[in-house]
Length: 422
Image 1 (cartoon, rainbow, N blue to C red):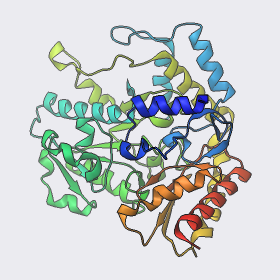
Image 2 (cartoon, rainbow, N blue to C red):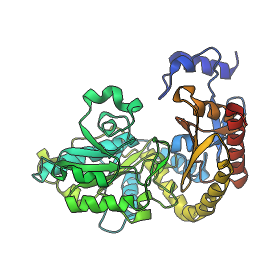
Image 3 (cartoon, helix red, strand yellow):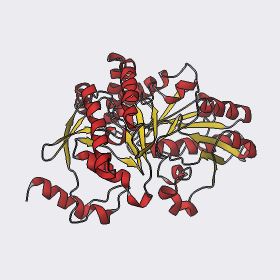
Image 4 (cartoon, rainbow, N blue to C red):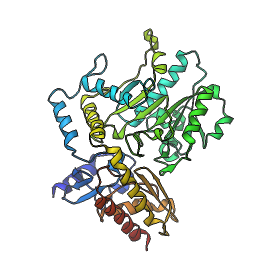
């Protein structure tokens, strides 16, 4: 038995993968891909075959795999210490990272940073802060949350309460807190704003909804509504943060500053689990006083030194390599390459937001799993990505070359023809 076959055997015997039907995964004729290495925008399997990382390892990797500066930052931190508690202590990389994250915003706006470990927990802490803030400011009636239809904000119980996609959250509805769902800002007028603690939204684009775009100006309109009705605004930039839309944060496109922003995925350049929830002095100051005002929430790896060191190195790369400016021609090239699908009869809507693309297949029943079959076929042509139902998602690392980007589109083209016909 080869090493690859042994790893597959061990995995199929013992691992439980997320969002995976294991009757299919463990079928005798299915051979899971074993990823064993990578560099830049490429990944390598255990048999030495190379693939373009078409979804940045589930939307996390920014600068490419094995970037020498991030690698060096992590190794240097290992020579000091890997992790110490953030409960009752601090550490240099966490303090520096919190300051750098807050400095990305106008002075006096988002000034406080709470570290956790993933997008769900970044949202979870924002929800708890919002509820406790209104309790501490003698407005306990403001306890309801509003989210948008087709939303996805994570899988912990609080975050999943805001989910509008039944496949992810429907089974657990009896254990979630009641949230209100709307389709647009206009629908907010029918709600009792006096009961609303906060509104949560992915700005500009909803990821798990199939890369669904919001109308231009909608986010600014939502900020104005929240200001007029004394409702807190929570932005989920777990996917869109750190350059994905062409600006450091998606909300910058409409000049919006939230009351809370949840950051994760790309925060470490895609290297290590880390998340941050940023908020204002207005929120933070309400928690000052006796122990009864303390926020009782935290994680064992809060402020983890290795994660913070990787994040600091990633932010340094944005400055030193002028990443955002260098991304603009690649965004334009992505727009150009997407046009090749306009005449494809199997493709319906084509959606783009910065360096994020969604190619929606049309004319297939959900049970056919056409999107998954196309992505599986794309592997044979050197591309790894994952669908959102029948929407093919493409959001590669920023370091991808033009040749690799063209190859990714050729792989999608060939895979669609192979699965759907010419």
